[in-house]
Image 1 (tube, rainbow, N blue to C red):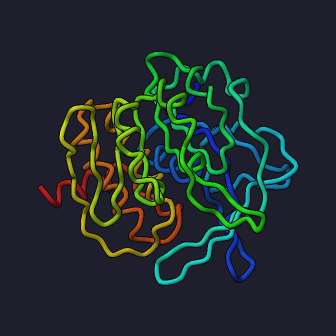
Image 2 (image 1 turned 90 degrees about the vertical axis):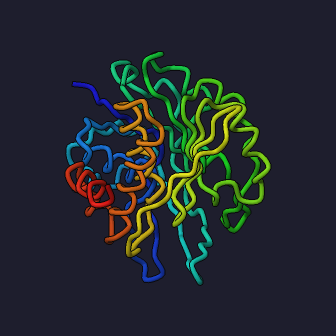
Length: 279
């Protein structure tokens, strides 16, 4: 059967100072979170032939566009601040690479990292599909050294015209915080993640609704936003209740960041137990 939940975006190699690397990207964390929450998941991505499909992505169907390179990042952390460098970029992702039978998925999440997703991608999905965007890859640029910095997202009007949910972080906005009001005007629903403060829900002509985070011992923040996005979309699709979906997503993210690596992504049973603890 085709996937219920599809994620479009590059799988990445995230390099570490000791020369090792881990699997990264929205496609990695969001797809694992969705699988652990009980959904059939598919990924549309691009990577070099020598880039393995790891055990972490077991039971996830992958459509991989051929590429001579794999998108690679080097992340340097100092006092909690990340400086990021782009080393390589895989082939772009265009609408024609998405299988026809996947275009009726319940949920489609577009998670670009280096602007790799064609702006027309939202247009190919069924009207019944919940289409979401995690836009960090459209909101960054890099110089000749590969150093990543924020930029204004100029294609937002085109992409958000067919998007149901926009999920982004304060870090994604960079120095362009004034553009949040534009995104709220363009998208039916905007979720801004606020780290340890939880998230804020924005809708046109409504006051923002803040949903607090769940207290947790932070071990590894990698992929927290992508985990939140998958959990939010799943619960929102199931309940049509944005506040409950945000609370479910905050609970999922709190469990994910309390241990190292995507291999410890929580199950639905664990998330529901976390929710009961605070009732």
